[in-house]
Length: 208
Image (tube, rainbow, N blue to C red; front, side, top):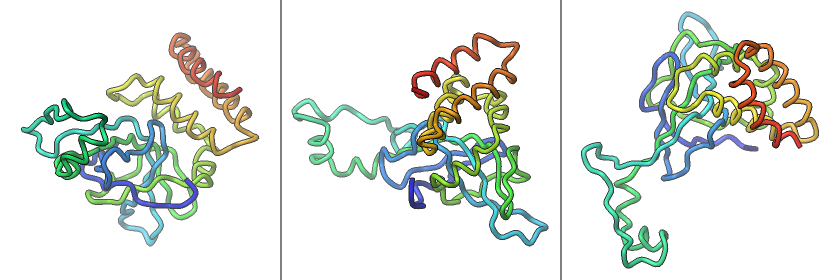
């Protein structure tokens, strides 16, 4: 994630999350990735306003909700041959990804709570650079937002994926980052040992 490039476009949004459609089939950001999209801060002079979110789900399906894909590879040697023989599939199928909102940036200041307005429809979605991930993860306040979110996947899986993804940009400081995250989790989940254990187990192997 060394350069900024758009990977999708917002097609549905509310205050807590948004869904984006990929520009390329199967090219959704990885689970736990930190992404951003612009939003409007009405009533202010701030031009540089970004909404931050973490990818929690991705799916590929027919572009027509009433038409399911059908099997086409009985005579094919591999998946690539199916797509070569049926080039129309690249237009008939679409890949979407869903993002839970975990904060926003107003000018140079980052806030890790819900922004005053949701993402804009047709807003461009961009993966955060390594430096942006470091800036955002200087605080762990976003973890509480994730723990309280109501999503279609187990929240401990998302928290673990997000922290592992963020840890990758720290290189030599990766272990220290994960230890700090573990301490934050211990405080937040002191009354839920089972959930705490599940998340820490996923971080333990990555910290080595």
